[in-house]
Amino acid sequence: MTKEELRQKANDLPLVPGVYLMMDKTGKVIYVGKAKKLKNRVSQYFQESASHTAKTRQMVAQVDHFDTIFVSSEFEALVLENSLIKRHSPKYNILLKDDKGYPFVRLSRESYPRFTLANRYANDSARYFGPFGGRYETRQALDAVFAALRLPTCNRRFPRDIGAERPCLNFHMGRCDGFCRPEMTAEEYNRRIDQACQLLEGKSRQLLREMTAEMEAEAEALRFEQAAAIRDRINAIGALSKKQTVIAGLCADTDIWGLYRGAGKCCYAVLHMENGNLTGRETELFSAPIEEEEAEMLSALTAQYYLPRAVLPHEILLPVDTGECENLSEVLTRRAGHKVWVHVPQRGEKADLRDMAQRNAAEEAERATTAEERVAHTLSLLGSMLGLAQPPRRMESFDISNTGKSDIVASMVVYSGVRPLRSAYRRFRIKELQGHPDDYASMQEVLRRRLQRAADGDEKFLPLPDVFLIDGGETHAAAAQQVADQFGVTVPVFGMVKDDRHRTRALVTPQGREIGLTANPAVFSLIGQIQEETHRFAITYHHESHTRSTLRSALDDIPGVGPKRKEALRRALGSVKAIREADVETLAAIVPRPTAEAVYRHFHPAQP
Image 1 (tube, rainbow, N blue to C red):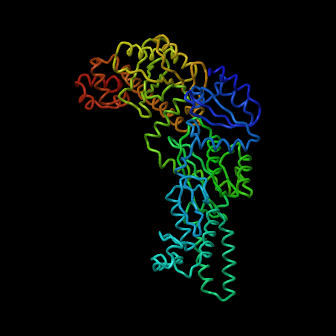
Image 2: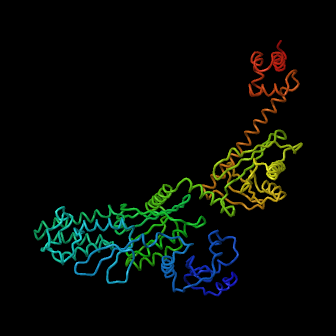
Image 3: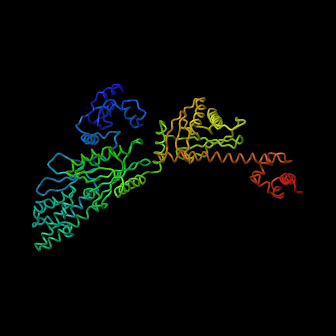
């Protein structure tokens, strides 16, 4: 379909809730989204809008056709969207790990049912719990449940192997109650299995209450040995949430989310709390487009995280408002059978917990991010902000420095990626300007000379950069752009705009469009570093030039002092003040004695 046909189809949609699927020419689903009003949301994709992010423009460019599914409410759209994302794994949606990373626990249907791990839910007669975390963690958690309830983990099959052999080592170590012994009944085995099911369903408190009542009944009946065995199992179950992340998640009454977008990697962290105590932590790294808003990322993550789960906490704290809190609360409440409150804490202890989750996410992302990834992320972000087709590999920055109308100089600083390329630095003395300082004319002269040298094939001025950065605002950038146009050079030009603390707060185009930097710390730091280095290099050259010119004028008209002897004095003593204060012997060590005496008399005319 053409873009016009897509726009017309979108405009014909009704103003109802639903889900839309964007597909490419092969019919593959590349994006799934939901909308409160399908017509308004879908039609926005096919309108000419400068507000579209790079991700949206790239996605729309690949859309050949789309499909929609109407639903009766927003929260139904939320559930359906998550299901379709899981099914199609669209390229432009934020995705958590695939289903292979989230195993289920399967309980068979037989007289002596057994627990196993399964990759996905199957439509059979078995009972399923989950999905949980990774296979290793889930296996550990299941083993911990078996140990707490003293269930068998051996390969013996019941009732076939009951009484066939002596109990194994687990029985003698107190890890299993020996259900292979004839005195252990099927009823007791199935009662323990039911208790394990309660743990896997997140009903640990209910189970502990029931077991405590059972222990007290055994004690009242003077069956102290049985009461002690139940007590040991109660203690083991109470310790589970402190030992296993998977069980901690099941036992938690509050989940606290942290989200961090780092230089190259994004990460979320979920802290599980039970009765005000931290019982576990989950983190996962994921990728997201540079332009993706935090709220959009968090909305996708929370839906994918919670909607497949059978066990849910009573409260979920988020770091930012996703705009979906109310819908997610309603969906999760229906699934959990109890009230689930999804909200953003504003102050107090819960806000402190949110900040702790944020720090956990940040630390995990930074730990897993290499220096190369940070560099690549910073340059990609800068390229995206400047509208470049590729991240900038080479950048050149220019600055002018002068003292009045004299000693006007300029610096050219080169950055390769995020590192200064000092071998490519260049310095210029302004030659064409006469009578008064003019930063704009000086900048044009410098850029003209730089581009002319490149046009002449001078390797010291090749290759051309990916971007020119000019110290100054819109007018400076426009002046530089005129020279670039004269040479037919298409390198983008940006001025570096400073704030009242002399920090580069924004870049500006020759047309006056400002691109703010302060919201992106990595880019803000890089451009600030380039501006400071350019200024430092210009000031250093200006100081050296001014020192030499001052020295030359102070030594003018002294008999016997020509250009070579002036340079010798400058190199040896450095300044006019040092030359003035030097005695004849010091001067004679640098120049011939008659010249040294002439220099001394020049600065000390009253002395013999």
